[in-house]
Amino acid sequence: MLPLAAMVALAAGELVARRFGAGVPGAGPLVQHLTLWLGFLGAMVAAREGKILTLATSEYLPAGAVRRGFGIVAGAVGAGAAAVHETGTAKSTTRSTASILPITIPSS
Image 1: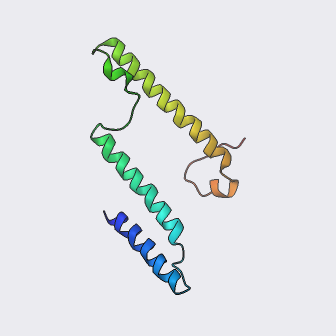
Image 2: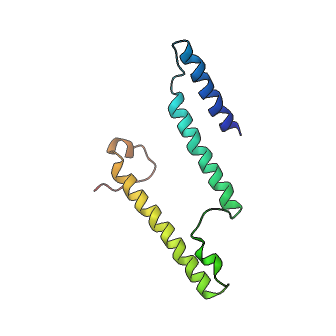
Image 3: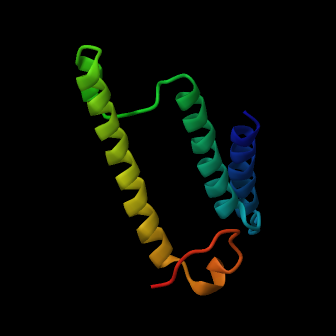
């Protein structure tokens, strides 16, 4: 709730400050980062409650080996999508940015 209130306050402060020819330095990127973190928090709550979006085809199958198999395939598809996304992110990350990360990103 606090990040949402901060986002509203920053946006309102920026609106008022622009009326007087000024602005709130860094308000735009800060609101963007707070939006990202609110998304992370929402995803964590959804995962904890088991309501996260998945490939739901396996939910319509009767319990058993076939349903478990489809669940494994759905997990593999999700992992593959995450890997493809990570590959694109790693390629777009510059060397100077990669040097401050706590992990090693292989260069191509």
